[in-house]
Amino acid sequence: MNKSFENTFGIVLFILGLCVLLFPIWSCAIFLTQDGAAHIYTAHLLNVMLDGEWANSTIGEYFDPALHVWPNLLADVLLTPLVRFFDPVIAEKLFQSFLVLSFPFSVLFFVREHRYRMHIATLVLPLVYSWTLYKGFYNFYLSIPCCIVGIRCWYDYTRTYSMTWLIAAAVATWLTYTSHLIGVGILGVAALLIVSLHCFNQVLSSYKYPSKLVKHCIKNFGALAIVFFGPFLLSIAYFLGSGAHDQSAVLQPFDELIFAWLLGETLLMTESAYEQSIVDMIPEWFALLAFCGLVYSAIKSKIHSFDLGLCLLFAFVVFGFFLLEDQLGDGGFITVRLALYSYFILALLAARSIRTRWLAIVSSIMSLILTFALVATRKSTITSISKQANAALEIASKLEPYSTLYTMSFNKNVCDKSIDKTRDVKPFLHLGGYAAARNEDVVLIDHYHGLYRYFPIKWKTDKNPYHHLGYSGGIEGNPPELYFKNYEAKGSQVDYVLSICLDETIEDVRIQAAVKQLDEQYILIETASDEKSELLKKR
Image (cartoon, rainbow, N blue to C red):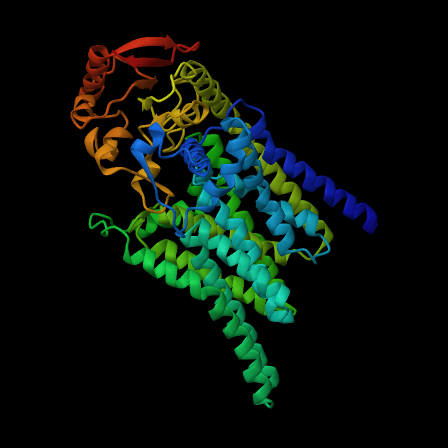
């Protein structure tokens, strides 16, 4: 196999991988994630703010701007211009496309000098559509490719001491910080390991020249301190201002965590046994590649310090996965996020371990097969969710300007019981965010972003529905539990209710209470074409 054919074959595999990644997003009307619509609505609010219309709008009566430099900001900033120029659903599709493609391209950058880089860049494809993406954790997801690029930039700086690479490392560090704290924490540890191992190598090779050794250490640790000074101080300030620690949070049993990591539970989207059988292979596949590569390097006595640094980073993240609780301060789903990061670090180790043509080809084809199988097994669920969401948004177009909307979702899964259930994902929870962003000056009552200080908007105290309409677990509950008259007593009201998956035959006190309130206070405006959603208006 000549080099020209190798390159062409690698490019074909890479492009095919990109097409597989884009297929779920563009093959349906809406690629719905749980929190995606909430990010769309926040971007819409930022556009209202930029237009100078905030003070005179209904939105301004309910929300206050809360601009800051905390994490969880980058996704909303990137979505803002897209929502301005495109329909909210199309804007999100464009953003989602950028998001999923950033993973193989970041790995391509990471292994750019490798002979089989186009093959190797496809390795991470099975990890892209993980559970956290379907949850709509866009900021966290953005942090992963930013972190991967940042790790490589820090490595390149230690090799060259180039100001260009230092600036690139600084940019990647700040982008990672504005995405998610976990990402910048892992990048900080990675940069420290890279710098420390590089200086250790200098000690071994330049111990006879102390002045030269000191110069190397100052350049490395000095650059590290300067770049991470801002993110470190801001992170400390953020943690000091976090909410009280949840005393009820407990560590998961060690054996459960072991099985969760080995079985790749953080990658699961549905409760399908077939999907589980596919996901089971992914962590073991990466671990096998990385282990074989390291053993081969050890035999040849050529374990690179960069590979050693990645091994130590992997150990650090896995240690955090087992040690930390799932809720820390304002943040949740800690173990799931750390598990996903550990898989990506393992994939980077595997990528650097591939040294032969046939292993590169087999690995890339294997990754493509796993990714395609995951996409195929989830297709019916994604399509069903998309059709139902699209039907609901069609009737939501009847909203009048200067009104308020509440998305009342009675089912965390799809209404069609023949479709595989989603695994702890409530795709319709914030669906009204699209409708509110499409219409003029509509307030989304179930906009949870206004509750948390790491988002750029917040509810006004006297209008906060999470205080006066119902508590957070009630407004976003399954089924919901809230009291419209309590909100009216505070001088506000819910003008429209978008009811999704309501089944009045279910014998549940909360559902019956919700049905009674809807019957007494609202009239039916329109029913969706699939008869699974209804738009109701205040009497």
